[in-house]
Length: 291
Image (cartoon, rainbow, N blue to C red; front, side):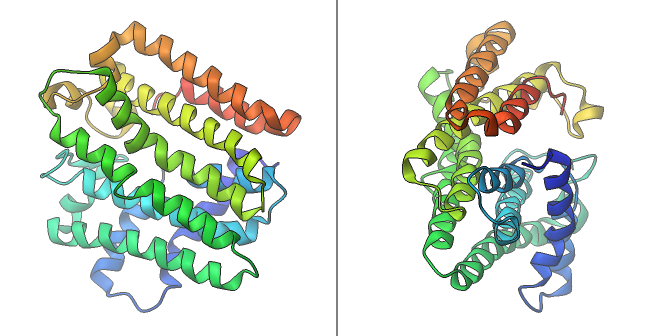
């Protein structure tokens, strides 16, 4: 297994070139898409995809386009989340949001373009592989990103604003809006390596619990985090009446639940023995992140 830094560097160097490799893209939309895609960040989802592929003995070179695809999906979701009609955030990763920098029209199209580019990239690579593993990986990602996955969670996140906080709703939003794409990245990496379904199930459980813990930390940081470090405003969840873990369980209860979900993630990935050290360390580090 390689380090997080190694995977991160691979992804940073490949993201914009992979987008450009799809063909002749109009300059305005390319600039808007590349602006958000190249804005930095943890790159958690593509790192998980590469690491999961390597965990199961897969080829990183073959997995890299899929890692770029999942980051394109994630970036499109952030561009659209920031729009005035949704979360209305004018800052993302320490600089103006895409719609502030390029206008709402270009931001919408850049998000649409990145989602389409992700699908195109994965289809292209799947056709180059000798078996169905590329198709399985692509389906795992698009299913988790789609109308029954991430978009379903985003829908409840928006439509339940200002309503009474209920645990079932909060958990649904967390599982789909955030945990689904993280889980999809792990599954895709494992599928690309030809990992048996019985082993993929452990990766799926790891991704789900890690995703829940990750969103709980996000909810916590919106209350106790430093906006200068986060690169975006804080306090917006309470202002919008969002269904969050903080609203449900409070600060102390959320901290307890972060630890519980992290422990569950580590127990799931322990199936892979010593090879799971990378994932265990990552899960533990996520609980203490400040951005």
